[in-house]
Length: 109
Image (cartoon, rainbow, N blue to C red; front, side, top):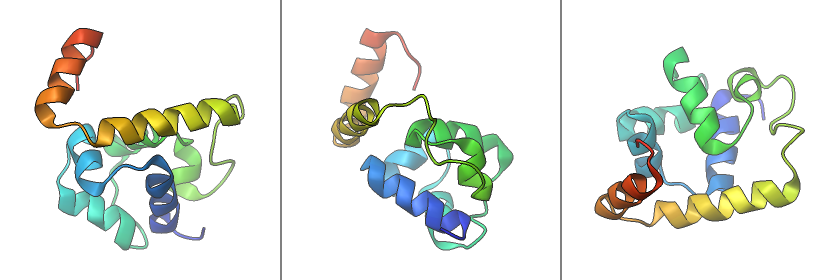
């Protein structure tokens, strides 16, 4: 995976999240997320890198530069699969259901 766009596309597809859901979660436009996936340099700002890497469950350094490993070595395969399953489940929730879930869990989306 030579470019940021390649690494981002791979991580996004693995997560099961849509461009729209990623945009909503990290607070950018859908067009910005489209750029991440389609422009070789991604057009990504530093302020977005860490929230994006967290959302996709990948190492920020790898996502940004291609150096190192894609996934944290402490993350087991089983854990990565559980995260992926949860991400896919959340991706289909409506905004109203996501807000209700965030209230129940005491987290801010």
